[in-house]
Amino acid sequence: MGSVDDKLHEMEIRLTFLDDAVAALTGADAEISRRLQAVELTLRALREEIQSLRTAGGHDPHSEPPPPHY
Image (cartoon, one colour):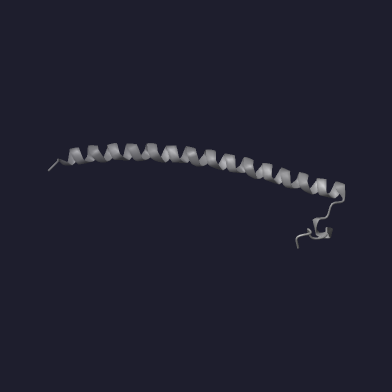
């Protein structure tokens, strides 16, 4: 059976590895959040562009007749 000092040392080593893992996950989470925000901004811009193109062209998809196969 190991001494209290040995067990304490082992726990300190494990805590160090856990701290490293948490730091890595925090960095990954921040990167994912940043990329998701960029995707959301791009999607919003594309939606606005599509809406402006529809408005400029007088195109209303609800006023179109159904396709011939209906």
